[in-house]
Amino acid sequence: MTGETLVLRILALTGKRDFRTLDQMLVSQTILQPFKRVIQSANGMIFVTGPTGSGKSTTLYAALHEINTPEVNISTIEDPVETRMDGIIQSQVNNKIDLKFSTMLRSLLRQDPDVILVGEIRDLETAKIATEAALTGHLVFSTLHTNNAIQAVVRLVEIGIEPYMVAPSLLAVIGQRLAAKICDNCKRAYTPDHEILNRYFNDVDNAEIKPVFYDGRGCSHCRNTGYYGRVAFHEMALITNEMRALINNGSSDSELAIAAAKSGYRPLRYDGLKKVLLGYTTTEELEKHASFDWVSSLRLFDVVNIAHTVNRSKSI
Image (tube, rainbow, N blue to C red):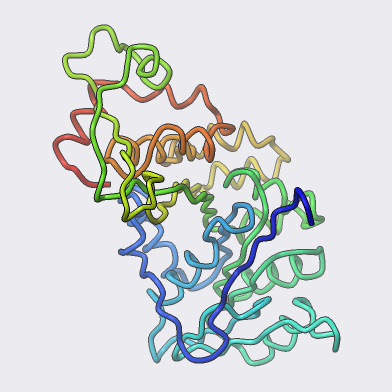
């Protein structure tokens, strides 16, 4: 295996594993509060997107925990079951005996659950059943592998779901990435040079104050890496009536992004830079995990306003 990297995911196979709640996940308030409202919906689809290992399952479990009450019947179909949760019916896919996502989802719907978590939408059959469930009174959570939240909308149509079904069923899409978190034991502040500031902000020359960035010096606590733990960058697209009309018309993801921005959508880099300014991570991590989404849109950050806001609130 020379030259190859082996990645292992360690799961709790028995019992209940501790997991983070939404309030513990350092989600920006501009995303957290609308997300908390939308997951209280009676029906519709909510997606979390991102590559493998980006924390999608953690976000979904936290969302289920938020709405998990004795009055709500919640069922999941997962591959595998990563966390045992009290009060939730959890099932695991087993392709060896033909227990596929689609097969299990059809059976699950006969039990009339209020909320369904489908671990991943992998094929047209599963996508179609999940969409129909969302249109017939169920709240459906699932994941997709797309580069950003907006592309998830287009991906559903590309899979084969008719736009007239996607438009009314979709409620919101969250995109996320995990970045290394600066070690709190050796964190230090520094003022970036003009070239760095100009890369991220408008009107740097006329700014009264300069933003402060952070990094880690390295210590025994973080094994001299400067990082300890992880923090997530998020973006969320709430599906508005304007976006539903665009979906029905087969509009592109760029057109959908413009419409989403009217209801508060900002790309991953926007949230990532906020967390750089708050001292959670570095610009190196920002570039590594959020360098590809609408880079030019990040310059909507005004250096004076964002610095004042972060320095005043010291919150997300």
